[in-house]
Image (cartoon, rainbow, N blue to C red; front, side, top):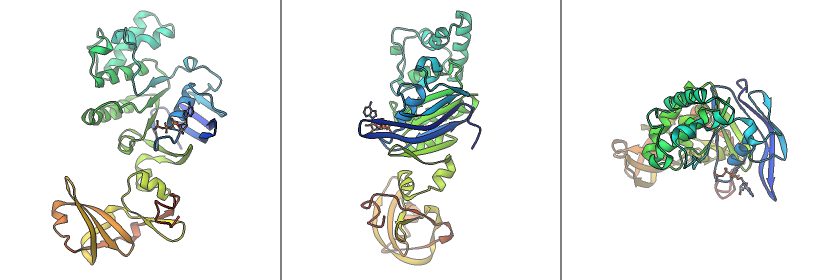
Amino acid sequence: MPPADALHAEHLSKAFGPVQALRDVTLGVARGETLALLGPSGCGKSTALRCVAGLERPDAGRVRVGGRDVTGEAPEARHLGLVFQDYALFPHLSVLDNVAYGPRVRGLRRAEAEARVREALELVNLPDLTGRRPAQLSGGQQQRVALARALATHSPLLLLDEPLSNLDEQLRAELRVDLRALFHRLDAGVLLVTHDQREALALADRVAVMRAGEVVQVGAAAEVFARPATAWVAAFLGWANVLPGGPGEALLVPEDAAQLGVGEAWPVTARQGTEAGETVTVAHALGPLTLHLSAREAALAGGTLTLWVDEGRVQRVPDDRPASASGGSA
Ligand SMILES: Nc1ncnc2c1ncn2[C@@H]1O[C@H](COP(=O)(O)OP(=O)(O)OP(=O)(O)O)[C@@H](O)[C@H]1O
């Protein structure tokens, strides 16, 4: 694990009445690193972020930012850069004054604050709109202003809660690329909350997968996606082939472990057209295999499909899914 000098949150727990929103959550973010908290709705991502921000008081645990223990401090005293879903820009202030807000509150003189504003707006590629009000900006531009405002704080830690969720798909795709490049230029650590697997993979160096208030897997983003620790994590990350193994176990079959046109002919049990070709299900000895085929590959599938699975690449993991999702094998 890299040195956690932007954020070190230890053993955070938080209950809302009977709901245990966080259970013993420990997270570290190094400077210059982006960590995505990824999980389904209600798993506790926002509560974890809000505990770090000071907007929620944890029942147990400690939060250190830039090496400083801020557990007992009010949100403003933590000096964090925050970006929420709705951007929360001040509608009556210009872009310049919105972005200058943090530095001004911290007592910087106007000239110094404005220098930070220019630097932050350049980082988000919006140097020329300082005189506008938020209502005179597009959604994507407002999002960039919200980011600039967070960057202008020069905080060691930026917190982003679903920052792209209010934007349309094309803009999301564009901003993902920009944000990734921006995060790489920063000296700060970034903690990002998302329920979108693609966004986590595109933006984060490391990913922490949460389920029902707990972190169930944490690691380098590509590694977590390639080697999910359990059947539930694999299914959540979008693995198409999480097959029943022995009792309490599941088999994870990477799609590219199946080689078409060699090996045995297996019965095709279902097929459905997609934009790129077809999704085909095959009754393989390992279990029902789902494969996403190009139009050319799909032409090979008739009543049967000939394929060989490299079993050396099949992963055996604990099956921690609810019984209904695992065909009763959990
Ligand atoms: N202020 C609150 N009062 C009562 N329950 C709450 C409160 N905030 C969160 N919860 C509950 O705590 C659990 C975790 O919620 P949280 O918002 O952290 O999840 P999340 O993973 O961020 O979800 P989403 O992706 O839908 O935003 C949920 O069951 C939620 O209903």
